[in-house]
Structure formats: C-alpha cells, structure tokens
Image (tube, rainbow, N blue to C red; front, side, top):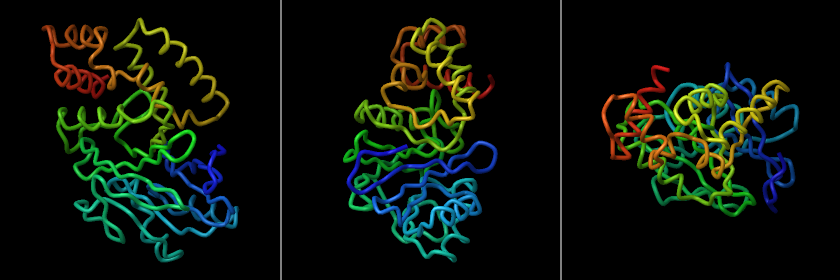
Length: 265
C-alpha cells in the first residue's frame, strides 16, 4: 500500500505465525524500515533482506510473545531503536512511552495512546500527518472486533476503544491479526440488520478468497460495523439485553455482555 507522505513510502504487512501481521513502514528512500510488533524474527529478516532495507526502529504495543518474540534476534542483528510501554517488563526497549509522548519516525510524529484492556501495558501509535492518518493499535481494536480482556476490565477496554473512536474517521487501522472474517460472523449475529455490515462481509470474503489481507481497515468502517464500537446503538443494546435476559441501559454493561458473548461464540 502506497502512503501519501513525503517521508514514508509504504506500509507493508509481513505475515507471521498463523494469522499475525508484522507491519513494516519503509522510508521514502526505500532504504530504512520500522517494524511493529515483531513476534517472529525470520519473516522480518527475509523481508528486509529481499528489499535491501536496514531496520532502524521497532514499535512495540504490548508484551505478549507473538508481539515481542523477535526482539532479541532483531536487536542483535540490526541494533534498532526500540520503543514500547514502560510497565511491561519487556527486555530490549530503549525508549519507554506513555500517554502524550511521541515517537519520531522518518520525520513523522507518532502520538502515543495508552489503551489498556487486552493487557494493562497496551499502547497504540497514531500519526495524523499522513493521508490517510495511520493507527497501529496492536490487539486493542481489530477489524470488526476487539481484543480479549486478558488483564483489563470491560470499563477499561470500553474507555480505550472510545479513545480510538474519537480519532479522525479517515484513519487507517493497522491491527495485528487476520481475525476479520471470524469477527464479522459474530458481528452479524449481534447486529443482524446492519446493511453496511452485510455489504462488508461480502467485500472482505472476496479479499480472503483472493488471498488478500483484509487490513488495514478504516475507522469509519469500524464505527459503522464493529459491534464493540457501537454499544450506544439500540440494536446492540437489544442484542446484549436479549443475551442476558434482562434490560441493559449502560454502555459498559452492553460492552461487557457483547465481549462475553464473543468469548463464547
């Protein structure tokens, strides 16, 4: 995918494991790269070598092994600058980041957002200087879904997703797993009369049949079809209430009910 930017030539998905994407950001001269959440070093090294790129930076969103497992090897081989969350205990981070901090990459400022829920240390990287703006959100926001609550609470994740929802609607959403079709199947169960959702299912299915990634998504599409961003909508309130067998009138309660439903879907 070509990015309209003076300093970044493209953002490329490097497949890893069964369904991870390690995102590579390549500078305008196509000589240097940054990767996001390199859980597996081998596909990263293969991509860098085949494109004659030097790894200068790494962005980490959270501490799970499929996001940090490649750090030791990549640091040893390339000595990049590694950015990541401070409370994680991740070995190899050079610059610890908190809400309101920023990371400069190839002349662009990436704002740091703390988005706990999936894990307590989770951060996201957001750059609104590109067209479209780019969000690297790890496992917090997925295409048509959100991360499981391994460490945080429903209220915590709902707040994090609300924070991401407030970004520019044109934002491209670079999450790190190809979960889209499974997420859409659940979204249809929870929001069955959503015509935009039904159209999206067909579009995304066509991509997968062609072996094309469904990512990045757009924040506008997520606002229209992702049930976890639509807990204020009557259709989702009704679905969550029916699921629990009692009326719900609080967004966090709706979110918690939908997240629990998805966990057992």
